Structures are given as structure tokens and as C-alpha cells.
Length: 381
Ligand SMILES: [Zn+2]
Image (cartoon, rainbow, N blue to C red; front, side, top):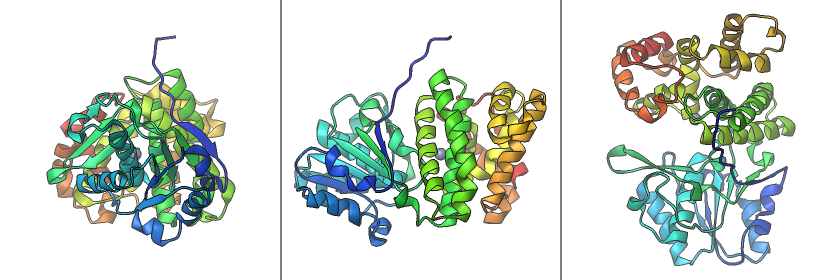
């Protein structure tokens, strides 16, 4: 076995209604509860906040987190935490509230300045106790030590450091029951891409991340369509949340690559949801990688295509890619760039932007040049 390093994620509690037991996980004292207005408006945070209050906690709600949270938002959350001398932080929602909660807990606890901690493994201080509660089955942000904040001129900066790993992640499938089908589909495909890209990650793939990625892929691919067509199916919702969490653990050790690198410009320039962007590029990047990652894709194929074991590796790879394609289509996501009003003439610009994602491109099983990227966008059109 080659030597490797594996970082575990937060401690985990999973089960229906478990988001109403947060007080068991937090110290005494005021709680900064970070969420967004939509979730609060839907009443999704009510039971969790009420149970905290019933158990003697003063809860300060900060619900101003937007998609792609800004530095201004993070600073407002910090101010809210300082005002009440928060002794712990809860992040409740999709990736954005959780990202703000992670960094708020770190900066409130360590007293450090944001500008001193950008980057990988720079932050080394102590944060406030932190619990993360995801309400979508996708980003896996509750499992990762990464927080992405949008700064001046739309520039996205990230803090990626072990102290941002939460104390606890709480997976409560009841919170995902009401998700619209489009969100279930897009976030589910995102999580599937996390598992596939972690499994083929060129630099830091290891036996632990492999085991997590395989089980994530099994849970997610077995349950995505059920979660889409039977939104009340608690078993499918539970499996999706766990799958997304395991994929998050996998990719926080073995980082994602080409699909994400080519997906980001679609979000940045055309504001497509992250999961949709990934779904659009998945087939094309996997075809590009098919030769370089042949053995790894062939190992994953039986998880989605159980009767492919007798086939040769090339046939298995083709079957895997077709099956993933079919999952995307059956989940209801439109699969062509043109379906989102993107013109074929934009391929060069998109390719240029994708080349900036060097931190992701280095993890791809083979090189993606600017000319490759342009060809892949044209193929996706
Ligand atoms: Zn993703």
C-alpha cells in the first residue's frame, strides 16, 4: 500500500427528527444560528430553534445568508455573534449557510482576522463549538473543512483548514422532504460527481476516500430517482443525505477535478445552479478521461450496472458513462447547454475561464488543455 493521509470529518448523528436534539451537542450559553431567509420563511428551522430554546439556550438567528455568500454577509454574521457573546454556532441549510457558519465559528473563537487565514492550512487556531445541519443532499459541506466566500469584484476566496471541520454533522432526512424536484435532482447529481471525481482524483486518492466514494455512489445512484419521484420517501431521503455526506468526506481528502473545473464557469458567467453545471459537463469530461481513468471507471461501473462484471474494462467504462447520463436525464435535468440559453459561440470564453481552475484541473486523471475544454463545451452544447 502506498503511504497516505486521511482526515476524518465531524462526528455524525443521523435520523429523522435528530435536528431537534442540537442542545445535547452544544455547550451552555448563547447560540449563533446561521441560516437563510427562505428556509426560515418555510418554517424549516422552527423545530430546531424551539428545541434549543426549550433547553435553555438563547438563540440569535442570523438568516441573511445568500447564495454564494459575500464577505459583507460573513462580517454581519460575526457582528451578530459578537453582540451576544455567542459560545457556539449552528449552520443550518445548504452549502452557503454552512460555509458562513464554519468561518464565523472559527473567527469568533480564534479572534483572528479574515485576511490572515485565506488559503490551505493557514488557519490553525481554535474555533467555537460548531454543529452543521444540511437541508439538501448535495454539497457535503457539513463534512468538509472548506468555506468559500465571495469578495470584492466577485472574486471567490476560500479557507480550507482542519479547524473548520465541525464538531458534529446532523443528518435529519425530514428536513429534505419538501425539497423541489429540480433541487433534489441537481444537488443529488452534484454529490454523485463528488464521489466519481474523488475516486479518480489524481493526487490524493487513497483507500479510505475510495471506500467512502464507492458507498456514496451506491447510495446516491440507487436512491436519486426515488427521491425525485417520491419526495416523501424518508428512506430514499435518508440514503441521499448519507450518500452526499460520504461523498463530502471522500472529496475533502481526494479533491474534485475536471467536471467541477468546467462546471464553475457555467455558474460564474450564466448563474446556472452548481449541480446543473456539473450535470451538463459530466458525460463529456468522463469521455475525455475515459482512457486515462479506465481502470478506475471500470471499478465503479458494477455499482451502477450490476450485470457488467463479465465485460472488458472499455465496455464497462462506456456502460458507466451511459448509465450516469441516463440518471441525469431521468432526474429531469435538461442536458444541453443550449437548453439554458447558452450560445455555441461562447465555448472559447468558457474554456478560457475554466483554465483558471488550476487547483481543480491538477486533480484530473489527465490533462485538460484550453483547446480540450473548448471542444468539451462544444460537445455539451
Ligand atoms: Zn460540487
